[in-house]
Image (cartoon, rainbow, N blue to C red):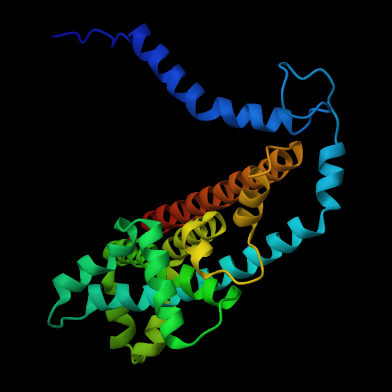
Amino acid sequence: MSRHSPTRRSPLLAIYAALVFAFIYLPLAVLILYSFNRDGVGGFPPLHLTLDWYRQLFADEPIWDSVLNSLLVAGGAVALSLTLGLLAALALDRASFPGKALFRRLVLLPLILPGIITGLSLLMLVVLSGLHLSLLTVLLGHGTALISVATTELFAGLQKTDRAQEEASLDLGATPWQTFWRITLPNLKLSLVAAGLLIFTLSMDEIAVTFFLIGRDNTLPLEIWGRLRRGITPEINAVSTLIFAVSVALIVIWYRIRMRSIGAEAKQLLQRP
């Protein structure tokens, strides 16, 4: 009878992992810490902690106007990208048409192209269409650029779904539209949430496409970028800390939805005869 010796963990690997995590997360920790520093940016460690920078932030109307603009653009981009991405994913998964292989590769093109190329091409399209640069053009630009994210995520979700439920629904007399609303769409709930959160985050963070398509109103990334040109201030650290907190909250929400969905699927498997 052979015995397997326990796996030995190399201390060098642990040190390497610690250095990688420190490289990734230490700047975030410093940013959060200095958002509470009374003396502003500079000098380590901070000796006097305060909430004054957050009070100034909440009284800063241009910042909150840009936050509202970013939320409107991101919400519209999520709706547009998910709608068109779902149609594209259904076509790739359920339909057969000439050029399907080429279409599947072209869908990924916005993910590969640099943001400056995407932004410039969308600007030329807006100019040719006669639209005025505004938040609407930014919304359309974000939605168009992020369709590939929705299509990729939803196509993967469709590949994992059990077609037997849809076939049973059709056999029992339901129309294709009823089957889509009652069977297909609920089965894609996790993929829709994951794609929506990712699109929302990418839209809130987008600078290159926004820079080419923005009008008089600013989004939050452009507002922060404009202020950073005049120097780093603790107020910028404060708004960055809030953005980080919201991002973590979105990740937690997605994780809880995913765990709940996995638990429901496991319960259904156990209940099957």
